[in-house]
Length: 303
Image (cartoon, rainbow, N blue to C red; front, top):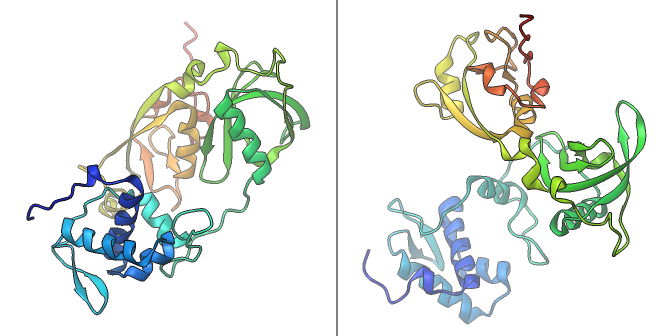
């Protein structure tokens, strides 16, 4: 690539964002136009023209100018790092946020809708508390006991794949727990200056040992499947294995979401179980391991 008078590191963040968007369109949709940039960012025509020309200067082999559009070339090599989750989200749900968000999908797709989403006022109350390390009072609808009063100090959001949870210190139970956002109501912070309003040291994320503990879990194709090579390709395995790193606090949720057989000897049957945990003892000490399909806590010796 020939030398240019510009460097990505020297450009303003807003301009880098526009250049990344141009690259996104070229790479994943095959073309980008000045109008695309103007519509997305609301900038002046001259600025859009400069951005398109600058991208071509920085990456002359990535696209060619044909009929007022920059068209993908097979010699394409990205200038920016594009996270696959964000790419898929943009392609299926639109791009960006705020008033200038592109709210229509960029490609035809079929994505199962979540059956439940937390109300924004509940989510906002929880996220403010997380950011400010503050305690909340609320009514929580438990499956076992029905509506109960809780006092919590939330420190993280957790997506189980089925629903959103809050990882929090539960002052009522005196332990860290996972609480489902959609089961919360009547959330309120303590009055300013109240001794209960702020988190204590033992209630902070740094004190949550299950959150701080990271596990390396080895997944393999389920031995009951006749064509393990297909599963290896599905999950990008190497030499028949895939090692994933997860927090102990979410391990049970992740293994349940992926339907990983965690039973001794991978004894579960059914087409849902394409993966097996190579060594179930990797879940030793994980509080929510009971959520993992087939997992059985080791029987303690009577000696």
